[in-house]
Image (spheres, rainbow, N blue to C red):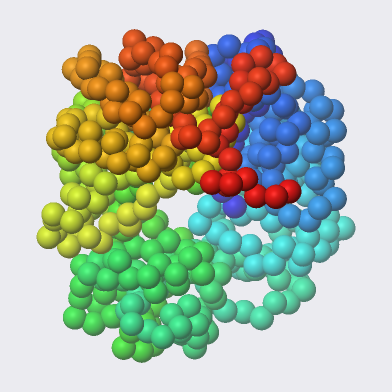
Length: 567
Ligand code: SAH
């Protein structure tokens, strides 16, 4: 099994240098530093226990640069639960010791050796099978899958107890291992893609050497693929990928089948028949055509998926939230990790980082929205995994609408085949409101005061009607150097419908370093208190404010309107 990107967790400044060395081994890994103790980490946390437990439960490999005991105590409550067990390692702050703690089947010893090699020390390997044989038999390398774990554990115990073994099939990674080999042995490690009944004397390891070419119109596609493999005597564990014609790229049935079978989906140009499609995808292999719509390509060696056709491109328009990492939704974090290309206004791309060396950053000026959207589609249509970054929510005065407009205007089927997804974020109005209390607790209206893309007259009209309708108002883009007078005019219009006592919330750089929150009133508010990094919330007739114990004020708009209900 190959492990995913680890998290490097450090408690003190003294560990940062070692952490950076580990990043050379795992370039995508982020360094999580304790807030207030570590300067210059990629991410900060404030609660070590909660952070490490969360990473563990998300199945993220953990490299903790601290005492092994701290890690053990922290994770102990989770160990009795059955569930994920990612690799967990303790590494001495100064890099002098590497101790694999958990995740033997997740490849912790492989990681321990990789780290130890980089730090030029010996890994503290304690797993008996691994020590004796020099490899973990139950953790074959990428491109191979273990048949059955429980059976495998018994098999390794048998070998440790003195049984000899023969290798049946090609297992190049075992050539270096010190196995008790004997060509006459009763027990065997069988490596092959043929379907076989499990037997106690065999450890089955499947090379991922099979591609299945499919049409999208087959009913119950996963079931049909399983049946076809069974009929052909090929083990489903050897399935490496599904292949289909690129004209069917957007088919939900194909996507779901690949998801259910947990294999990647690759696309090639259409062919005359399914057998030819399979041959085009994986040349030089044995092709078994089991029906008009399914053909199986069986190779001798594990397949290199990246050499087979191309994937469906992806375009995700993401919202970072106001800025703070805690306010970014997990789906966005996952998307940032898988992206090959990142597009956006430079400030936001920087906020979304750090990125790996293999992730291409395309920074552009804020005004070139449509050009950026088309650029994103051109990249995604080549099969890349592209992210367009916005702050807050991408659908609120940001890139999502521009991306959809670019797609709407395009007749290119490759653009329409892109896997397009919009991932939401916490918008500035919501982040500001939450800090102030609940000013948006009743009906409200969101407006951009920028007249760059709409006439000022329509802004005035909407302001007038929204204020008259007694909606709470949230102003985005309230003012800028190029638009100096508009906010003052907007406030005049609002003042015609509201008292000067109406609560106003000003949130500046909310969720970012140096954030400020100010509660004032409409009568006190002047445009010079506001800049383009400020969110302006103006209350309705029912919005009220009261002092909070720690200083400042709570602001809220009650749920009711008109007469206060009983109770
Ligand atoms: N898509 C963004 C809004 C982009 S418009 C979102 O959903 O939040 C840009 C305007 O949003 C700014 O002029 C400012 O009014 C507001 N804004 C964005 N981030 C902010 C923050 N962190 N604090 C306060 N206001 C912010």
